[in-house]
Length: 255
Image 1 (cartoon, rainbow, N blue to C red):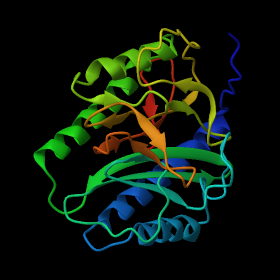
Image 2: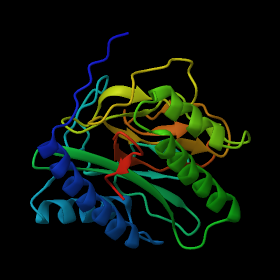
Image 3: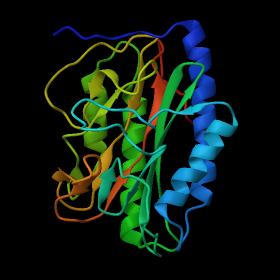
């Protein structure tokens, strides 16, 4: 199978490092605003202001992915509890015990970085803390497997292997290439799909993003056309980093 992969130049990588650094700061600052009583719309506006005030663009705002009926209307994806990814900020008020996925992108000097974290609202259950830790560990397992000379499927297998069987690993959504566009080839499943995929070579930039559910791995698309929700309405967690493939271990650009 032939893949349409665009390796990044030295200049691209310099700009991606700065894009990733700025995104990491913006996500961290937005996470500090997560507390009971805050609306998801407020978090969206807070992130938007951080990004544009430093002269960059929110990469997701007005981005229309393949299959979508209209451009994404937010600057950051905000997904609460049973919402897996791509939630749209609005009037929903956060409550004590919720968990919230913050998935953002920044376009800096033409280069797009993509990262996500899941945070608790006030005090959360030990069950939810474990879900978040499992998901974060799955991301790191994938990153550790992203060694130059290996293949995309090595990442997928490492992610799946790290996740205890009692959890659901979302299969219809995946990691992806990133940089010039929000979504580029290759796609990186979070499970072993049996496809070797392309070789990991220096200059390849990937966004790895496991999504792990308390229950079933099955999800459905909300009527808003963007938000994916767990079929059993149990909670889901999401962590993501943009990484650069090198000759050895991958470099995390959004740390």
